[in-house]
Image 1 (cartoon, each protein chain N blue to C red):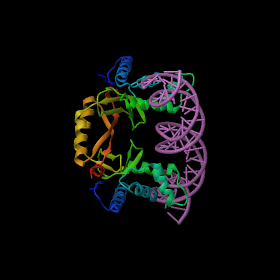
Image 2 (cartoon, chains in turn purple, blue, red, yellow; image 1 turned 60 degrees about the vertical axis):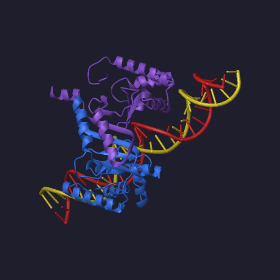
Image 3 (cartoon, each protein chain N blue to C red; image 1 turned 30 degrees about the vertical axis):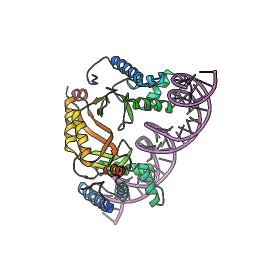
Image 4 (cartoon, each protein chain N blue to C red; image 1 turned 90 degrees about the horizontal axis):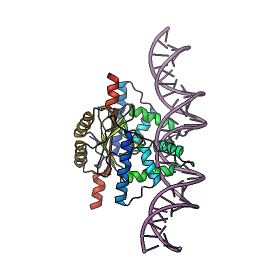
Amino acid sequence: MTNAYHPHNHKHCIEEALQEARSLCKDKGARLTPLREKVLELVWQSHSPIGAYDVLAELGRLEERAAQPPTVYRALDFLMEHGLIHRLSSLNAFIGCSHPGEQHNSCFLICEKCRVTQEIEHLGIEASLKDCAQSQGFQIKDSSVELSGLCPNCLGADTE
Amino acid sequence: MTNAYHPHNHKHCIEEALQEARSLCKDKGARLTPLREKVLELVWQSHSPIGAYDVLAELGRLEERAAQPPTVYRALDFLMEHGLIHRLSSLNAFIGCSHPGEQHNSCFLICEKCRVTQEIEHLGIEASLKDCAQSQGFQIKDSSVELSGLCPNCLGADTE
DNA sequence: TTCATAATTGTTATAATATAACGTATTTTG
DNA sequence: CAAAATACGTTATATTATAACAATTATGAA
């Protein structure tokens, strides 16, 4: 399971994410076109969220003809619809989903120093959100849980 | 205590919010200027979040000279700093804080139909967020918990 | 009070994020 | 292959937010 905080060969993360995306899309009959796959790869370039215009810029460095914003946003929309990436509304940025395919309401731990962001599925959070909603007679359709602060690595760097 | 879902005379909510804001600012030596108070009143116009540019437009209907965006954003920043309003990042919009003064990490229930938004302090959520962060060695500085879905009133309207 | 300082607001310009609308090309399916 | 659907290209523009500097107003010390 992906943990952004431990040292790792990130190429594995990228390759694994792409493989899984191909497999999931195949199963669902969704078309993971070269453009969409490229955008997914760019989003997975690190464990930090990336903005749509940064994706656009990266894309521009690779292709002759510079892509336009709608091209990128459409690809991002596709990837979100199929649960391959998430949008972090507190940052206006996107990050690869660390466990696509599974139904989940994740919590994101966003480091305000190094920007590394860890996606967590925490049953206690899910349960308490449900409890909160139920107590109000509210029906949850979508949740956004984003915590910003300091990740263990940046915390450690302070004291060492 | 404010509950957005029950029928109520909303003027009371506004007046109460303004009174409390005046009192809190006085205590802290913060200057709740006429502009800032007016913006707070506009944010409190309803239990639905309002965008900065909507505040701007409302302000324009009242004043001769149309205010400019920085004027509104500065007032909103002041109000946020002093815990009088919240920004909902999933909507890029602002809502009056229903219990200013108290330290709290709220959860917002946003109705996607009528837009009415209820702020909830839920101890279970706070506890589980802390637990989640702690399990990762993450230090929370700020939290954003926004649930969108259907409020009890809109749910009821479907079945009736 | 009066001046100096700080805080607030005004003003202009622009940055950053996102989408509408329509045309073209490619893929899929009958 | 032809028709339809899907994806992508392109232009323009909407929406949200901030930088930079000028003018004004409030505050506090002498």
